[in-house]
Image (cartoon, rainbow, N blue to C red; front, side):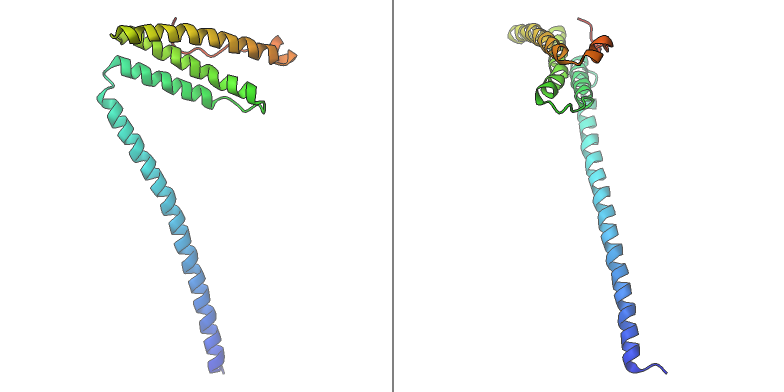
Length: 160
């Protein structure tokens, strides 16, 4: 026969297990909701950005500027860390400078302000010179095996 004390213990163990299961379920739901909330928030930001950009997508100049930035972000994201801060800096600056050139070319094609057009031309000249300097600097530091099998530099997608 089960005593009252045993019944109380069994009930306590049962409730403890149920409470543990309920806490686990609540925790799991909180994590899932947090993940979904982040995704919904991110989707909202992306849709707002898309809505804002779709209003002006018809404008070729805006589309070209955004495309230049997108190419830059993709190229910078593809740079693998070398462990050498100087090399990493230069490798990240190359697509940054190329994007500046691409955006300046867009300004020359579509801009009307004389001062901004002059600035765009100066940016093209200066950034191209700096790109060449950085490429030479990197080439001097690459291992001998890399010098034997050179890989072509990525094309920015714009003609000079």
